[in-house]
Length: 607
Image (tube, rainbow, N blue to C red; front, side, top):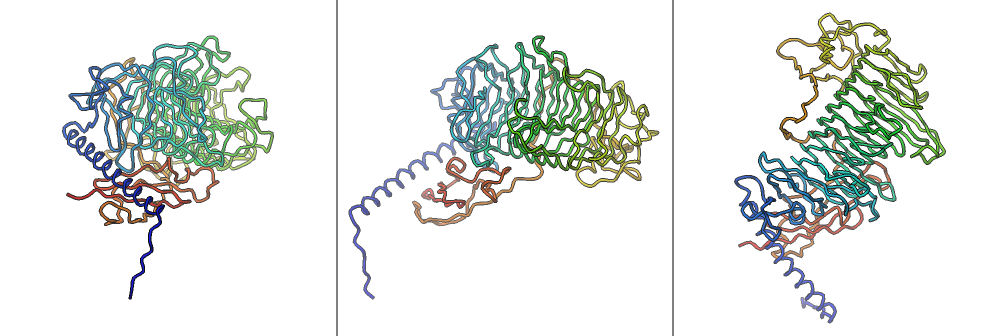
């Protein structure tokens, strides 16, 4: 059969020429990029570092160990997928804006101290870059490290402080903004004070879809943060509308203001295994000077708080753990507070219901009333609650308190002893099982050593084997022992246990003025895991050496919401969320059409 070929029009011919030139240009770029990756991989064999920063460096250097960069900003501008940037000993006076992203699952861009070197980042005054909302506008939060619209970045082993104080101070040491996800802040030290110190905010888009998710703040020391100016709403670790936030294994001492705050639309997140000491208002000019502040505050003030777990935290000399529906018009649900120890504080654990209307900052809605449902408070220990209330607020030193008269609030297996012995639970809105009803005020549970804050149960404690049996995740105690050891659950945070199979963790203590050497540990696994949806690969056949394979060797999971307007979900894939994927022999360029990702696969010509 005779073949009929359609003659190309001039415009079509021009298009083909442009396409050919484009592919040729891309092929050159790929080869150059891969060459750089191969060089860095070779250089990293000895130390795992691929780029270096040192005080004797120069930003015109190549970034090798013998020719390091001078600034962290230069390294941030240069780093590509999989790079490990190692910063050597010294004090670096700079602020850094991150613009390059890593890739999943094992190709983060990491910034860390070299070996055991001590690196101090002194944040200078003025000239800060604000993190951004999703519409591109600045949200006004300025940081020493600003991570807006970037992903898969790790910050390890830095010491953060600042140069001075004043009106042009940065807002925080670290800020995140729209589009930030898979950010890990691990094993750093934070000194001095700023307005929020560490601001981990995921401001949502106009249609309510989350724009930040999977952020870990773990294994950090946040110490002696005092302020020299008046503050009435200071938050040390401020988390606003992040999906899958993890604040765990941190040591925090000396906060001037609230310590850990989850607010806005924060969902599917945890606060665990933190050691929190001494939170109060420290500035003499502050109207609340000298009064305690919340160590952990789950704040239903202006968003939908959902699926938050607060467990295995140790609090001393604070206002305690507060779960509060602060403003009208919002909803809080599925909050789990268990295995926490609160001692020598003004309050223990308080579930409250302010339900404020406009006029009470930051509230803006007039209706409906806020709601709180499925709040579960299990197996906590509260000891020695003292009277140090906030002016104008409830002056009673509550050990446990519940004020909401609607919804489902469960108090089970909680232990309370010492101090003011104040408990107030609304009888028409909660289920109280084997808590203070079998632990009357003044009844001594025979802790092992209260003088040394050892709240393990002794052999003769009445709190043994009288609790209600609970399912996962409540079947493990503060130390990690499986409940029950005896015939039933013990009440309180510790399960009595003896023998070689028992775990007895050290009692938390204050650190000396110089904290011990940081030990970096793996990122904890968040539960539940994000709803990843693996994009489909369509090989368009426009490759340099034909489209030989449809296997993505390095693929970044993409989160796609089931319903675009469903709060609590990450944003759908878009140009900013799906950078090109660079593998050993190919480049995948994402083309976004609706909720489907089409990848243009361009392979490196094989030698």
